[in-house]
Length: 272
Image (cartoon, rainbow, N blue to C red; front, side, top):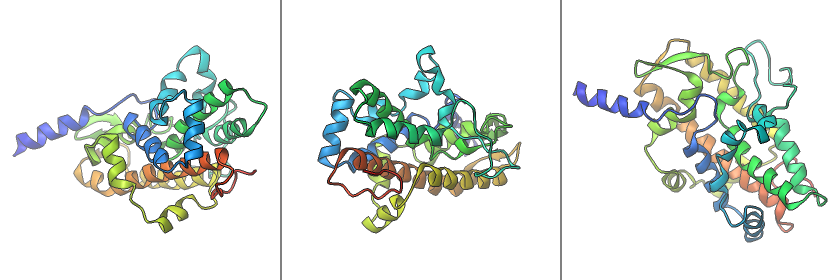
């Protein structure tokens, strides 16, 4: 029995990805695929045009790599908003090169600006698809002092790692060993009333603050040197499912609001 548990733990550890990124590929793909499930036909046509026939899933994780190239290095800080333990969401210092909340507002402005070129809008769309995943990853509202949890050292089944890496991919992969399509099939089942509550009156700021409050609880429940095992996975799996669903439904509402004039925006910031 001990051998079986050891093998399982080892397999879970193999799911880790780079410390610098947001949700791993699985999380970003899931958010984008949920959104695509909820596009109106008009939105789907507009997205297809801007992405040259590709699904949003195709570009869901693209910016994590692109931000580390010279061409898109300006966007490195756009994936997060750091908030130290002695600060609140409202009084946290702004990052001079920008943060995820401001980046979403800015890219939405581009998508709504009729003077912008197709190439500019295509880039903005790719970024928005990615950012709606990132803003729902709790550690993207982590402390500046520990680089969003990258220097908050813990153990995962007794192996050294950090809390950001755990939340990127290890925890989601341990929660359910599913493909992104299986994630979508299993969690995109909310009743219409619940969906409406998720998207109602939201803005990048309200989403960011909501995620920040989850992040605070994660820090409190995961002191440095915590050894994360099965009970932790069980406790936090509902949060992962919730955040993937929130990200996907809000991305759909956002893009429907931008591209379909017959759609009634449910969020609180896209204006026509």
